[in-house]
Length: 450
Image (tube, rainbow, N blue to C red):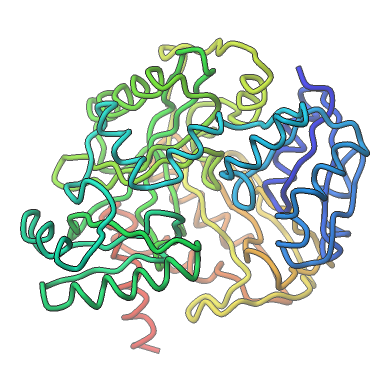
Protein backbone atom coordinates (compact mmCIF):
# COMPACT_ATOMS: atom_id res chain seq x y z
CA UNK A 1 0.00 0.00 0.00
CA UNK A 2 1.08 3.60 -0.58
CA UNK A 3 2.73 5.51 2.27
CA UNK A 4 1.84 9.04 1.21
CA UNK A 5 -0.56 10.32 -1.47
CA UNK A 6 -0.40 13.75 -3.03
CA UNK A 7 -3.87 14.96 -4.03
CA UNK A 8 -3.46 16.86 -7.31
CA UNK A 9 -6.83 18.57 -7.20
CA UNK A 10 -9.02 20.95 -5.22
CA UNK A 11 -12.58 21.40 -3.96
CA UNK A 12 -14.92 18.65 -2.85
CA UNK A 13 -13.10 15.84 -4.68
CA UNK A 14 -9.83 16.68 -2.93
CA UNK A 15 -11.60 16.44 0.42
CA UNK A 16 -13.30 13.19 -0.63
CA UNK A 17 -9.94 11.63 -1.54
CA UNK A 18 -8.36 12.89 1.69
CA UNK A 19 -11.05 11.19 3.75
CA UNK A 20 -10.54 7.89 1.95
CA UNK A 21 -6.78 8.12 2.53
CA UNK A 22 -7.28 8.72 6.25
CA UNK A 23 -9.52 5.67 6.52
CA UNK A 24 -6.78 3.61 4.84
CA UNK A 25 -4.11 5.00 7.16
CA UNK A 26 -2.29 6.79 4.33
CA UNK A 27 -0.60 10.17 4.88
CA UNK A 28 -1.85 13.01 2.66
CA UNK A 29 -0.38 15.99 0.87
CA UNK A 30 -2.66 18.80 -0.29
CA UNK A 31 -1.46 21.05 -3.07
CA UNK A 32 -3.12 24.40 -3.62
CA UNK A 33 -2.99 27.64 -5.51
CA UNK A 34 -2.73 30.91 -3.61
CA UNK A 35 -6.51 31.28 -4.10
CA UNK A 36 -7.14 28.00 -2.25
CA UNK A 37 -4.91 28.53 0.77
CA UNK A 38 -7.92 28.42 3.12
CA UNK A 39 -9.60 25.41 1.49
CA UNK A 40 -10.88 22.68 3.81
CA UNK A 41 -8.73 19.89 2.35
CA UNK A 42 -5.65 22.07 2.86
CA UNK A 43 -6.58 22.53 6.52
CA UNK A 44 -7.12 18.81 7.08
CA UNK A 45 -4.19 17.32 5.14
CA UNK A 46 -1.05 16.12 6.91
CA UNK A 47 1.04 18.43 4.72
CA UNK A 48 0.30 21.15 2.18
CA UNK A 49 2.31 22.76 -0.60
CA UNK A 50 1.47 25.93 -2.53
CA UNK A 51 2.06 25.21 -6.22
CA UNK A 52 1.37 28.58 -7.82
CA UNK A 53 -0.98 31.49 -8.48
CA UNK A 54 -4.74 31.13 -9.13
CA UNK A 55 -4.79 30.35 -12.88
CA UNK A 56 -4.99 26.56 -13.27
CA UNK A 57 -2.27 26.53 -15.94
CA UNK A 58 0.13 27.97 -13.34
CA UNK A 59 -0.90 25.68 -10.48
CA UNK A 60 -3.14 22.61 -10.84
CA UNK A 61 -1.97 22.00 -14.42
CA UNK A 62 1.66 22.85 -13.65
CA UNK A 63 3.39 19.45 -13.88
CA UNK A 64 6.87 20.64 -12.75
CA UNK A 65 5.33 22.19 -9.64
CA UNK A 66 3.45 18.98 -8.86
CA UNK A 67 6.62 16.91 -9.30
CA UNK A 68 8.50 19.28 -7.02
CA UNK A 69 5.76 18.92 -4.41
CA UNK A 70 6.09 15.13 -4.60
CA UNK A 71 9.85 15.36 -4.17
CA UNK A 72 9.65 17.82 -1.27
CA UNK A 73 7.10 15.74 0.65
CA UNK A 74 8.23 12.25 -0.37
CA UNK A 75 4.82 11.33 -1.79
CA UNK A 76 4.94 7.96 -3.54
CA UNK A 77 1.59 8.32 -5.35
CA UNK A 78 -0.61 11.00 -6.89
CA UNK A 79 -4.40 10.97 -7.00
CA UNK A 80 -5.63 13.31 -9.75
CA UNK A 81 -9.33 13.34 -8.85
CA UNK A 82 -11.41 14.49 -11.84
CA UNK A 83 -10.72 17.31 -14.27
CA UNK A 84 -7.31 19.01 -14.47
CA UNK A 85 -4.75 16.22 -15.15
CA UNK A 86 -6.97 13.23 -14.35
CA UNK A 87 -7.15 12.08 -17.98
CA UNK A 88 -3.74 13.27 -19.13
CA UNK A 89 -1.79 10.24 -20.36
CA UNK A 90 1.46 12.17 -20.54
CA UNK A 91 1.16 13.16 -16.87
CA UNK A 92 0.73 9.50 -15.93
CA UNK A 93 3.85 8.64 -17.95
CA UNK A 94 5.90 11.44 -16.37
CA UNK A 95 4.98 10.25 -12.89
CA UNK A 96 6.00 6.71 -13.81
CA UNK A 97 9.34 8.02 -15.11
CA UNK A 98 9.90 9.57 -11.67
CA UNK A 99 8.91 6.37 -9.81
CA UNK A 100 5.66 7.89 -8.58
CA UNK A 101 2.42 5.93 -8.88
CA UNK A 102 -0.50 7.45 -10.78
CA UNK A 103 -3.79 6.46 -9.17
CA UNK A 104 -5.67 5.82 -12.35
CA UNK A 105 -5.63 3.67 -15.49
CA UNK A 106 -2.65 2.82 -17.63
CA UNK A 107 -1.49 5.67 -19.85
CA UNK A 108 -2.35 3.75 -23.02
CA UNK A 109 -5.97 3.35 -21.92
CA UNK A 110 -6.26 7.04 -20.99
CA UNK A 111 -4.87 7.98 -24.39
CA UNK A 112 -7.11 5.60 -26.34
CA UNK A 113 -10.31 6.56 -24.53
CA UNK A 114 -9.42 10.25 -24.55
CA UNK A 115 -9.70 10.28 -28.35
CA UNK A 116 -13.38 9.76 -29.07
CA UNK A 117 -12.72 8.29 -32.51
CA UNK A 118 -10.27 5.71 -31.16
CA UNK A 119 -12.53 5.09 -28.17
CA UNK A 120 -15.45 4.28 -30.46
CA UNK A 121 -13.32 1.91 -32.55
CA UNK A 122 -12.01 0.21 -29.42
CA UNK A 123 -15.49 -0.13 -27.91
CA UNK A 124 -16.79 -1.67 -31.11
CA UNK A 125 -13.90 -4.13 -31.21
CA UNK A 126 -14.65 -5.09 -27.59
CA UNK A 127 -18.30 -5.85 -28.35
CA UNK A 128 -19.85 -2.66 -26.96
CA UNK A 129 -22.74 -1.29 -29.10
CA UNK A 130 -21.99 2.10 -30.68
CA UNK A 131 -23.97 4.92 -32.28
CA UNK A 132 -24.05 4.65 -36.10
CA UNK A 133 -21.64 7.16 -37.61
CA UNK A 134 -18.33 7.76 -39.36
CA UNK A 135 -15.56 5.18 -38.97
CA UNK A 136 -13.08 7.92 -38.11
CA UNK A 137 -12.45 11.62 -38.42
CA UNK A 138 -14.21 13.55 -41.15
CA UNK A 139 -11.63 15.04 -43.53
CA UNK A 140 -13.92 16.96 -45.89
CA UNK A 141 -17.42 18.33 -46.28
CA UNK A 142 -17.98 15.88 -49.12
CA UNK A 143 -17.19 12.92 -46.89
CA UNK A 144 -19.47 14.32 -44.18
CA UNK A 145 -22.40 14.60 -46.60
CA UNK A 146 -21.81 11.04 -47.82
CA UNK A 147 -21.77 9.61 -44.27
CA UNK A 148 -24.79 11.69 -43.23
CA UNK A 149 -26.75 10.42 -46.22
CA UNK A 150 -25.93 6.84 -45.21
CA UNK A 151 -26.97 7.14 -41.54
CA UNK A 152 -29.75 9.68 -42.09
CA UNK A 153 -30.42 13.16 -40.70
CA UNK A 154 -30.30 14.63 -38.15
CA UNK A 155 -26.61 14.06 -37.38
CA UNK A 156 -24.30 15.21 -34.61
CA UNK A 157 -20.86 16.68 -35.36
CA UNK A 158 -18.51 15.99 -32.42
CA UNK A 159 -14.95 16.95 -31.54
CA UNK A 160 -12.60 13.97 -31.40
CA UNK A 161 -10.83 15.42 -28.36
CA UNK A 162 -12.29 16.87 -25.18
CA UNK A 163 -15.90 17.02 -24.07
CA UNK A 164 -18.33 19.08 -22.02
CA UNK A 165 -20.40 19.92 -25.08
CA UNK A 166 -17.67 21.96 -26.76
CA UNK A 167 -17.13 21.21 -30.44
CA UNK A 168 -20.55 19.54 -30.64
CA UNK A 169 -23.16 20.71 -33.17
CA UNK A 170 -26.40 19.27 -34.54
CA UNK A 171 -27.18 19.35 -38.27
CA UNK A 172 -30.87 18.78 -38.88
CA UNK A 173 -30.60 18.84 -42.68
CA UNK A 174 -28.01 18.58 -45.44
CA UNK A 175 -28.16 22.37 -45.86
CA UNK A 176 -27.01 22.92 -42.27
CA UNK A 177 -24.22 20.34 -42.23
CA UNK A 178 -21.41 22.49 -43.65
CA UNK A 179 -22.08 25.24 -41.09
CA UNK A 180 -22.20 22.69 -38.25
CA UNK A 181 -18.86 21.25 -39.39
CA UNK A 182 -17.21 24.66 -39.57
CA UNK A 183 -18.48 25.76 -36.16
CA UNK A 184 -17.60 22.46 -34.46
CA UNK A 185 -14.07 22.52 -35.90
CA UNK A 186 -13.51 26.09 -34.75
CA UNK A 187 -14.76 25.35 -31.23
CA UNK A 188 -12.70 22.16 -31.01
CA UNK A 189 -9.54 23.94 -32.16
CA UNK A 190 -10.04 26.74 -29.64
CA UNK A 191 -10.89 24.45 -26.72
CA UNK A 192 -8.62 21.46 -27.32
CA UNK A 193 -6.02 22.51 -29.89
CA UNK A 194 -7.37 19.83 -32.22
CA UNK A 195 -10.03 20.47 -34.86
CA UNK A 196 -10.68 16.80 -35.71
CA UNK A 197 -14.39 15.96 -35.75
CA UNK A 198 -16.55 12.95 -36.53
CA UNK A 199 -20.21 12.25 -37.25
CA UNK A 200 -22.83 10.31 -35.32
CA UNK A 201 -26.53 9.70 -35.76
CA UNK A 202 -28.44 12.24 -33.68
CA UNK A 203 -30.94 10.55 -31.38
CA UNK A 204 -34.10 12.57 -30.79
CA UNK A 205 -35.01 11.81 -27.17
CA UNK A 206 -32.36 9.60 -25.59
CA UNK A 207 -31.45 9.06 -21.95
CA UNK A 208 -27.84 9.41 -20.86
CA UNK A 209 -26.94 6.17 -19.09
CA UNK A 210 -23.47 5.39 -17.75
CA UNK A 211 -22.08 2.15 -16.35
CA UNK A 212 -19.57 2.23 -13.49
CA UNK A 213 -16.69 -0.24 -13.81
CA UNK A 214 -13.79 -1.30 -11.63
CA UNK A 215 -10.80 -3.38 -12.71
CA UNK A 216 -7.47 -4.45 -11.26
CA UNK A 217 -5.42 -4.51 -14.47
CA UNK A 218 -5.08 -8.29 -14.25
CA UNK A 219 -8.12 -9.29 -16.25
CA UNK A 220 -10.54 -9.04 -13.34
CA UNK A 221 -13.27 -6.41 -13.70
CA UNK A 222 -16.81 -5.87 -12.45
CA UNK A 223 -19.60 -3.39 -13.03
CA UNK A 224 -21.47 -1.53 -10.31
CA UNK A 225 -24.66 -0.81 -12.18
CA UNK A 226 -25.77 2.26 -14.05
CA UNK A 227 -26.41 5.90 -13.33
CA UNK A 228 -28.97 8.00 -15.18
CA UNK A 229 -27.44 11.39 -16.00
CA UNK A 230 -30.09 12.60 -18.44
CA UNK A 231 -30.91 15.85 -16.65
CA UNK A 232 -28.45 18.17 -18.40
CA UNK A 233 -27.98 21.77 -19.40
CA UNK A 234 -25.66 22.49 -22.33
CA UNK A 235 -24.39 18.90 -22.12
CA UNK A 236 -23.42 19.43 -18.46
CA UNK A 237 -24.93 17.03 -15.92
CA UNK A 238 -27.11 18.60 -13.24
CA UNK A 239 -28.89 15.69 -11.51
CA UNK A 240 -27.86 12.02 -11.44
CA UNK A 241 -29.60 8.97 -10.04
CA UNK A 242 -29.11 5.26 -9.58
CA UNK A 243 -30.66 3.05 -10.65
CA UNK A 244 -32.17 4.59 -13.78
CA UNK A 245 -35.98 4.84 -13.67
CA UNK A 246 -36.19 3.27 -17.15
CA UNK A 247 -33.68 0.38 -17.00
CA UNK A 248 -34.93 -3.10 -16.05
CA UNK A 249 -32.86 -5.54 -13.97
CA UNK A 250 -32.40 -7.70 -17.08
CA UNK A 251 -31.11 -4.74 -19.10
CA UNK A 252 -28.82 -3.75 -16.23
CA UNK A 253 -27.32 -7.23 -16.14
CA UNK A 254 -26.90 -7.39 -19.91
CA UNK A 255 -25.25 -4.00 -20.48
CA UNK A 256 -23.26 -4.28 -17.24
CA UNK A 257 -21.82 -7.66 -18.19
CA UNK A 258 -21.07 -6.41 -21.72
CA UNK A 259 -19.04 -3.54 -20.30
CA UNK A 260 -17.34 -5.62 -17.58
CA UNK A 261 -16.36 -8.24 -20.15
CA UNK A 262 -14.83 -5.52 -22.33
CA UNK A 263 -12.82 -4.18 -19.39
CA UNK A 264 -11.51 -7.69 -18.66
CA UNK A 265 -10.30 -8.04 -22.24
CA UNK A 266 -8.68 -4.63 -21.96
CA UNK A 267 -7.01 -5.47 -18.60
CA UNK A 268 -8.42 -2.16 -17.40
CA UNK A 269 -6.99 -0.76 -14.16
CA UNK A 270 -8.96 1.37 -11.72
CA UNK A 271 -12.37 2.99 -11.90
CA UNK A 272 -13.98 4.09 -15.13
CA UNK A 273 -17.33 4.98 -16.59
CA UNK A 274 -18.65 3.81 -19.94
CA UNK A 275 -21.29 6.26 -21.16
CA UNK A 276 -24.23 5.49 -23.43
CA UNK A 277 -27.19 7.10 -25.07
CA UNK A 278 -30.27 4.94 -24.53
CA UNK A 279 -33.34 5.06 -26.73
CA UNK A 280 -36.09 2.58 -27.59
CA UNK A 281 -34.49 -0.17 -25.51
CA UNK A 282 -31.05 0.12 -27.15
CA UNK A 283 -27.70 1.31 -25.80
CA UNK A 284 -25.23 3.29 -27.90
CA UNK A 285 -21.67 3.92 -26.66
CA UNK A 286 -20.61 7.58 -26.70
CA UNK A 287 -17.43 7.74 -24.60
CA UNK A 288 -15.48 6.38 -21.66
CA UNK A 289 -14.20 8.46 -18.76
CA UNK A 290 -11.02 6.95 -17.33
CA UNK A 291 -11.32 8.52 -13.88
CA UNK A 292 -13.58 8.88 -10.89
CA UNK A 293 -16.79 10.74 -11.78
CA UNK A 294 -18.39 13.70 -10.04
CA UNK A 295 -21.51 11.56 -9.59
CA UNK A 296 -19.78 8.50 -8.09
CA UNK A 297 -21.54 8.92 -4.69
CA UNK A 298 -24.91 7.70 -6.03
CA UNK A 299 -23.28 4.38 -6.93
CA UNK A 300 -21.68 4.21 -3.49
CA UNK A 301 -25.05 4.83 -1.86
CA UNK A 302 -26.84 1.98 -3.66
CA UNK A 303 -23.96 -0.54 -3.46
CA UNK A 304 -22.24 0.34 -0.18
CA UNK A 305 -18.87 0.16 -1.98
CA UNK A 306 -16.27 2.91 -1.45
CA UNK A 307 -15.04 3.60 -4.98
CA UNK A 308 -12.12 5.84 -3.98
CA UNK A 309 -10.93 3.20 -1.52
CA UNK A 310 -11.07 0.49 -4.20
CA UNK A 311 -9.40 2.82 -6.72
CA UNK A 312 -6.45 3.35 -4.38
CA UNK A 313 -6.15 -0.35 -3.54
CA UNK A 314 -5.95 -1.59 -7.13
CA UNK A 315 -3.57 1.24 -8.08
CA UNK A 316 -1.27 -0.01 -5.30
CA UNK A 317 -1.19 -3.44 -6.97
CA UNK A 318 -3.72 -5.23 -4.81
CA UNK A 319 -6.02 -7.67 -6.62
CA UNK A 320 -9.70 -6.87 -6.84
CA UNK A 321 -11.36 -8.95 -4.13
CA UNK A 322 -14.91 -7.98 -5.08
CA UNK A 323 -16.75 -10.41 -7.33
CA UNK A 324 -19.73 -9.52 -9.45
CA UNK A 325 -22.02 -11.49 -7.15
CA UNK A 326 -20.81 -9.34 -4.24
CA UNK A 327 -22.38 -6.24 -5.80
CA UNK A 328 -25.92 -5.88 -4.42
CA UNK A 329 -28.10 -2.92 -5.37
CA UNK A 330 -30.25 -1.57 -2.56
CA UNK A 331 -32.71 1.30 -2.80
CA UNK A 332 -32.41 4.47 -4.85
CA UNK A 333 -30.04 7.45 -4.75
CA UNK A 334 -30.13 10.92 -6.32
CA UNK A 335 -27.39 13.54 -6.51
CA UNK A 336 -27.92 17.27 -7.10
CA UNK A 337 -24.93 19.40 -8.09
CA UNK A 338 -25.16 22.65 -6.14
CA UNK A 339 -23.28 25.30 -8.10
CA UNK A 340 -22.42 28.92 -7.33
CA UNK A 341 -24.64 30.12 -10.16
CA UNK A 342 -27.87 32.03 -10.57
CA UNK A 343 -30.65 29.39 -10.65
CA UNK A 344 -32.22 30.58 -13.93
CA UNK A 345 -29.56 32.56 -15.81
CA UNK A 346 -26.70 30.33 -14.58
CA UNK A 347 -24.50 33.37 -14.27
CA UNK A 348 -21.44 32.47 -12.08
CA UNK A 349 -21.69 33.81 -8.53
CA UNK A 350 -18.32 33.58 -6.77
CA UNK A 351 -18.01 35.23 -3.39
CA UNK A 352 -18.15 34.77 0.36
CA UNK A 353 -20.60 32.33 1.95
CA UNK A 354 -22.16 34.24 4.85
CA UNK A 355 -24.37 31.43 6.20
CA UNK A 356 -24.00 27.72 5.55
CA UNK A 357 -26.11 24.87 6.87
CA UNK A 358 -26.22 21.39 5.37
CA UNK A 359 -29.16 19.00 5.81
CA UNK A 360 -28.87 15.84 7.88
CA UNK A 361 -30.77 12.76 8.86
CA UNK A 362 -31.03 9.21 7.58
CA UNK A 363 -29.88 8.71 3.99
CA UNK A 364 -28.43 12.23 3.54
CA UNK A 365 -24.86 12.88 2.37
CA UNK A 366 -23.24 16.19 1.43
CA UNK A 367 -19.88 16.19 -0.34
CA UNK A 368 -18.56 19.74 -0.13
CA UNK A 369 -15.47 21.68 0.89
CA UNK A 370 -17.54 24.78 1.69
CA UNK A 371 -18.05 26.27 5.14
CA UNK A 372 -19.43 29.47 6.63
CA UNK A 373 -17.01 32.29 5.82
CA UNK A 374 -15.42 30.44 2.89
CA UNK A 375 -15.09 32.36 -0.36
CA UNK A 376 -15.85 30.60 -3.64
CA UNK A 377 -13.00 31.70 -5.95
CA UNK A 378 -13.82 32.90 -9.48
CA UNK A 379 -11.05 30.93 -11.17
CA UNK A 380 -12.42 27.37 -11.18
CA UNK A 381 -15.51 25.23 -11.55
CA UNK A 382 -18.51 26.70 -9.72
CA UNK A 383 -19.39 23.53 -7.78
CA UNK A 384 -20.18 24.33 -4.14
CA UNK A 385 -21.06 20.78 -3.23
CA UNK A 386 -23.17 17.72 -3.96
CA UNK A 387 -26.31 16.71 -2.12
CA UNK A 388 -26.79 12.95 -2.29
CA UNK A 389 -29.93 11.31 -0.90
CA UNK A 390 -30.76 7.61 -0.51
CA UNK A 391 -34.09 5.92 0.10
CA UNK A 392 -35.54 2.41 0.04
CA UNK A 393 -37.56 3.38 -3.07
CA UNK A 394 -37.40 6.20 -5.61
CA UNK A 395 -40.52 7.77 -4.12
CA UNK A 396 -38.98 7.76 -0.65
CA UNK A 397 -35.77 9.16 -2.10
CA UNK A 398 -37.64 12.04 -3.76
CA UNK A 399 -39.53 12.88 -0.55
CA UNK A 400 -36.27 12.85 1.40
CA UNK A 401 -34.63 15.00 -1.26
CA UNK A 402 -37.40 17.60 -1.00
CA UNK A 403 -36.90 17.80 2.74
CA UNK A 404 -33.08 17.99 2.42
CA UNK A 405 -33.24 20.75 -0.20
CA UNK A 406 -35.52 22.80 2.05
CA UNK A 407 -32.97 22.47 4.88
CA UNK A 408 -29.92 23.36 2.77
CA UNK A 409 -28.81 26.98 3.36
CA UNK A 410 -26.08 28.75 1.38
CA UNK A 411 -26.28 32.54 1.78
CA UNK A 412 -24.08 35.30 0.40
CA UNK A 413 -23.96 33.92 -3.15
CA UNK A 414 -26.45 32.71 -5.73
CA UNK A 415 -26.76 28.93 -6.01
CA UNK A 416 -28.77 26.41 -8.00
CA UNK A 417 -30.63 25.23 -4.87
CA UNK A 418 -33.89 27.02 -5.89
CA UNK A 419 -33.80 25.23 -9.25
CA UNK A 420 -33.66 21.84 -7.55
CA UNK A 421 -36.47 22.78 -5.16
CA UNK A 422 -38.59 23.43 -8.23
CA UNK A 423 -37.47 20.37 -10.19
CA UNK A 424 -38.08 17.88 -7.39
CA UNK A 425 -41.74 18.92 -7.32
CA UNK A 426 -42.45 18.54 -11.04
CA UNK A 427 -44.60 15.69 -12.29
CA UNK A 428 -41.94 14.72 -14.87
CA UNK A 429 -39.26 14.23 -12.22
CA UNK A 430 -41.70 12.34 -10.00
CA UNK A 431 -42.40 9.97 -12.89
CA UNK A 432 -38.78 9.82 -14.09
CA UNK A 433 -40.11 10.91 -17.48
CA UNK A 434 -37.27 13.02 -18.83
CA UNK A 435 -34.54 12.83 -21.48
CA UNK A 436 -31.35 14.77 -22.18
CA UNK A 437 -33.29 17.66 -23.75
CA UNK A 438 -36.04 17.96 -21.12
CA UNK A 439 -34.29 20.38 -18.73
CA UNK A 440 -33.45 22.96 -21.37
CA UNK A 441 -37.05 22.94 -22.62
CA UNK A 442 -38.27 23.28 -19.02
CA UNK A 443 -35.90 26.18 -18.32
CA UNK A 444 -36.94 27.97 -21.51
CA UNK A 445 -40.58 27.79 -20.39
CA UNK A 446 -39.72 28.90 -16.86
CA UNK A 447 -37.81 31.96 -18.10
CA UNK A 448 -40.64 32.78 -20.52
CA UNK A 449 -43.09 32.71 -17.65
CA UNK A 450 -41.08 35.03 -15.41
